[in-house]
Length: 186
Length: 67
Figure 1 (spheres, rainbow over the protein chains, first blue to last red):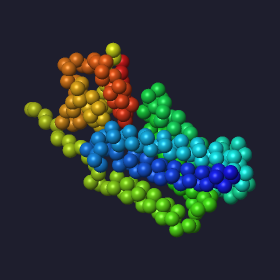
Figure 2: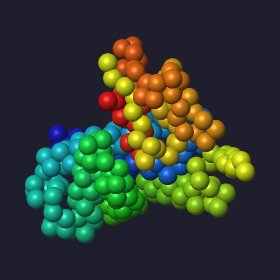
Figure 3: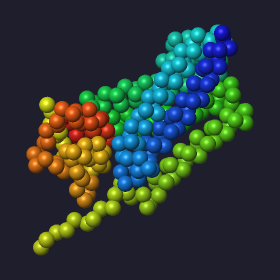
Figure 4: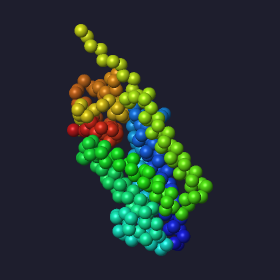
């Protein structure tokens, strides 16, 4: 049973990392006129679905590891970072990521009420969340160091680096929307 | 029955709403939504309610609301 909880905790953590990588790449590259084969709204929906799937997986991740007798987590470890007994720094990064994820998810789901200014400010936090979660996976994960986990982590970093690089290219101006100059009639 | 209202101080012409509600909205050449029905805030027929809700949720700047 404890083996099952442990395996579930590892598996959900790794798939959640993949989901958040997909979410981040879609969020970075989404712009109208750059549809990647989907409409503007399709990318937004996929971004949202991947993010919520990752969030659900993280819930399973923390609950299964809470009941895993080897992980020895206390409830406070889900809220306050860097108090754990085993690899406190790497575990603390996971706690930090969980806190950020909770805040970002709540603000995102309530964004129609909260308004775009606070939503955007909080959503920038995803650029902290993703690297912190990745470091937690690499530092805390049982599978870190194995060839397949290194491959997954490298693929995630590469995907985000390519997306951000593409986004920052000078040719990626405005929204990729070809804007005609406004005609002024004298 | 609700109407589509666009807050023009927020809208930046991303165009998701016109993709989701082609019956009510089209895009001008800069990508900003234009009402097709002649009304400034087009009325949403009952059978389009779900699509209007989707459009409201999909606006990246929360400029579109159902009022």
